[in-house]
Length: 195
Image (cartoon, rainbow, N blue to C red; front, side):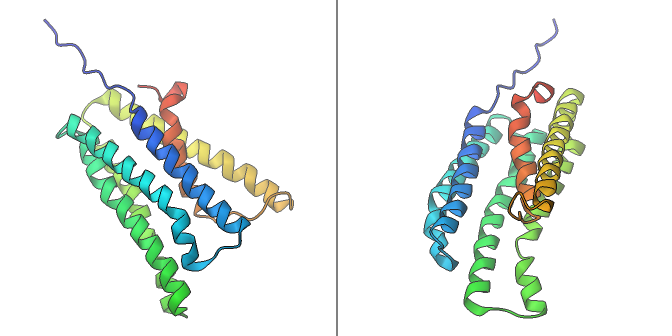
């Protein structure tokens, strides 16, 4: 008798935590803009989002414990430290820029401080695709990455056209990475990204 395929339930709690994290961090940025809060004064606004990030990390680790040794467990094991490093480096870069006002090469290095964890996210996705032994799951992960890339390209293209026409405010280029991650979050609920 052939063993049935393992059932991989949709990780609703991870998606809810990621959505909550995204919404709270965007809301913190909007609130800081509306109330003209700058510098370290923004940090208290980020606390709810950071708590949601803690929930997201907890749920990711819970999922990884459910499938020990799998490619997705190794992916989560790589991404969780990168998420923490991202938060630490962003806060460090903002604090250094506000408090010490670096110039020249130091300003460039401080501005790029959050880049390695973000690049690490992309590397981790690539490793997931390489390490996934199940062809079907590899295809699902690749499809989700393509959906995320398409989502990012559509939003950035439309926004860029509106911005170029003076109809939308300027968005920083790193927003593309945020959109890609949001696309990864949305991909499993779209028809092409379902497992």
